[in-house]
Image 1 (cartoon, rainbow, N blue to C red):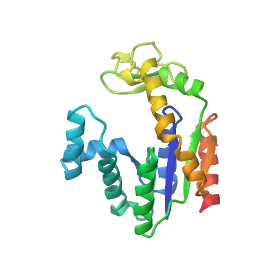
Image 2: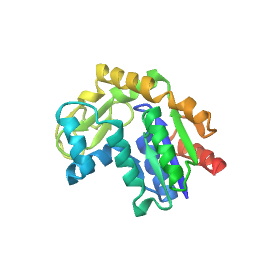
Image 3: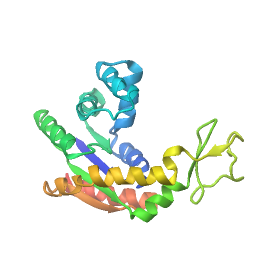
Image 4: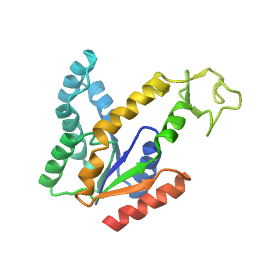
Length: 217
């Protein structure tokens, strides 16, 4: 059984590394965004509660988010382990998660923090582009389209999402630094946190993460 938490600021590469680790250990990659959308779509009890917050333009409460995550890790495909991608987001969520995991007779094996300097995070996020029609992803520096502004796949316009613009990026990073970064000390005190340098090749970073996980199991 392999139960892992993966941390990192927006732009650190959690999504890519989470996918690699999910395939490596054959465990589901669980993100609160995916769970939230699924619960709202399926009109579950928690999904309906979440929609009430969303309809008011408010953040979904910790209780609802934690409830969704707990329900998810109790599903059969998590019996051999799970990878929490960007959850918990604050210490209150972490306390509830720890108590619940312990009651289930399980424990978090390792908390991986992909660390990248703020300047690089802004560069990464600010360069992201997406096709307006097919949703294909690009980056002005790392994976630009053949013709700037035009999707290679379908020929439609590619654009910059609102949450990838400078003001929004700064706001997202500020939220992460104020709410989520304190969890680094929280998990260091439990001797679970391992910092991974998020600069380098994808396979190189994956290798470093796998080495850290194996040393903690």
